[in-house]
Every structure is written in C-alpha cells, then in structure tokens.
Image 1 (cartoon, rainbow, N blue to C red):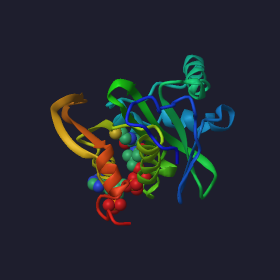
Image 2: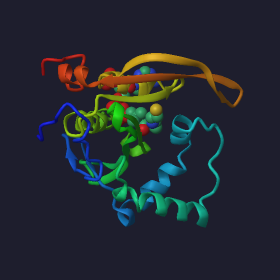
Image 3: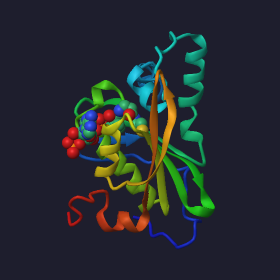
Image 4: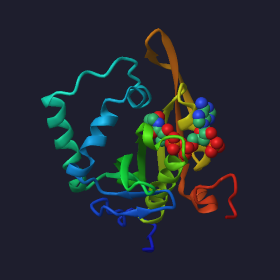
Length: 208
Ligand SMILES: CC(C)(COP(=O)(O)OP(=O)(O)OC[C@H]1O[C@@H](n2cnc3c(N)ncnc32)[C@H](O)[C@@H]1OP(=O)(O)O)[C@@H](O)C(=O)NCCC(=O)NCCS
C-alpha cells in the first residue's frame, strides 16, 4: 500500500480502484452492463425509503429518468473529488448496488459515505463487507481522517451494518424526517482513522 504523508496531498480521487473481498468486488461502473440493475434500485421502494426518506411509490421510469441515470452513471469514472463504485456479488458476477465516498473536504481530510444494495444483494453480509472495503481504501489509500454518514431511525439493519464495521453514533437529529404520518429520527455516525487502525473494520474482534 502507498505510504501516506501527514498532510492531505496524497488523496487521489481520480483513480478508480477495483477492491476485492470474499463476497464482493467493488469496481468502477460499466454503464451498459449495469444499467438494468441501476434502473432496478432507482425504482426500489425500499431503497428510496431508506436513502431518500421517500415513503411514496416511485414514479414510472421514463425517458427523462433514463437520461438522468445515463448522465450520472456514465460519468462516475470522471469525478476527481468523489469515489462511486459498483458492488458486485462475487457469487453471480452481477452488480447489486453501489458504495460511495462523497462530500470530500480536503482541508479536513473527511468524506461522507453512502451505500445501497438491491434485494438480490441484501441480508447476506455483502453490504458490511463492501463498506469495510471502501472505508479501508479511504483511510489506507486516500489518507482520510474521518468518514461520516447519516442513517434513519427506521433503518436498524443499516445501522447495525455500520456498527459492525466500526462507525460510532455521534448524535441524533430527533424527528428530522416526516415519513408519511410518522416522525423519524436521523442519526449521525462516523469513524476516524485511529479507530480504523485499531480494528480495521472489525471492532467486535479487533485482533483479527
Ligand atoms: C443497508 C445495507 C447496505 C446493509 O447491507 P446488507 O448486506 O443487507 O447487511 P449485512 O447482511 O451485511 O448486515 C446486516 C446486519 O443487520 C442485522 N439486521 C437485519 N435486519 C435488522 C433489523 N431489522 N434490526 C436490527 N438488525 C438487523 C443483520 O442481522 C446483520 O447483523 P449481524 O451480522 O450481526 O447478524 C443494505 O441492506 C441496503 O442497501 N439496504 C437498502 C438501502 C439502505 O438502507 N441503504 C443505507 C441507507 S443509510
């Protein structure tokens, strides 16, 4: 692995790596190959519920949605200040979601994080492994100091997955989301570089 200096000059988000784990591979998007599953997650009520806090039925897919999707996912490899990677299920070789480092603040060596999986990828440990891979890359290769995220209170699976990888609860914006007829909390979580060095994404068994 490339040695990092203590300043923030080492972060190179223009490089788009392939990261390989036991269950998943993270790689740059391949638009034509991945488009069907991307359409699937952009219209998946469960994904919209947990990522956008949207309780409604997704609108039908139309030309505008297709154009927007192609413009976005066709340009992820060109972004110099964020890292968007497809999550590929190694058991099938198929893309099942995405993992993203965004909102890079070079002066603070910090980033935001987001992840989503389609139904085919969920509940099999793929998400936790994917987030360990990209978060590890963020600390060990990009030299980040802090990675943060938000997770809604009605998404305990995601919160558990983040905790398993070492994210720590920082605070809660109480009832920040109006979700249909309900109020939902929004939790802030983060992980810091010294914590990652201690457990490398396995806080419950740090000696591995
Ligand atoms: C969140 C997400 C990335 C997690 O990935 P995943 O592969 O499904 O999760 P994993 O299998 O790695 O781990 C889930 C953990 O949560 C636990 N879990 C599942 N449902 C749970 C629930 N209702 N309450 C508490 N824990 C739950 C699982 O048991 C597992 O923990 P364990 O290994 O200790 O048993 C994925 O489910 C997803 O993309 N969901 C839809 C979109 C989304 O929520 N994105 C995140 C927005 S913040």
